Length: 153
Image 1 (tube, rainbow, N blue to C red):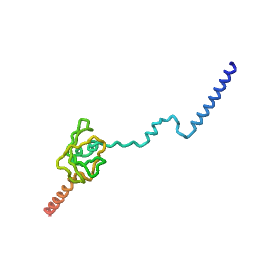
Image 2: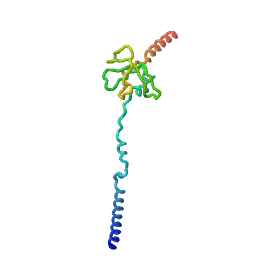
Image 3: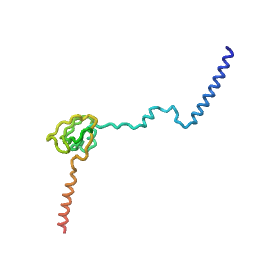
Image 4: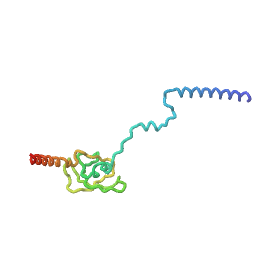
């Protein structure tokens, strides 16, 4: 048994030298170290963008989207013109009323409560929204300007 103990000590020394040489070679390699977090590679992947509910879409429009057209993403040629919004205190929940439109034409006369306001599938429809009031003002200004020029001359 006495001869086995020195033999094991020799094995441990040679194994230690072998381990040091492997660690030295590993440190010289250009590959990324294996101690890197496996979640870091998943962080570089694109995150799926979360769709918005009606209130989240409306909050960025002037006066909370009153007068603007909105529709669910899977609807074709159907939209609501928002007439009223009641928000809860947190600003992310509430109720909305609107006038239904089909193919850009009124489908109903009176506003009705919009169902599915909290579902995450709403979008803003820019080409159906209310026309801006700046064009009539510009024509009035140009008419006034020509009248004042005629009076001065």
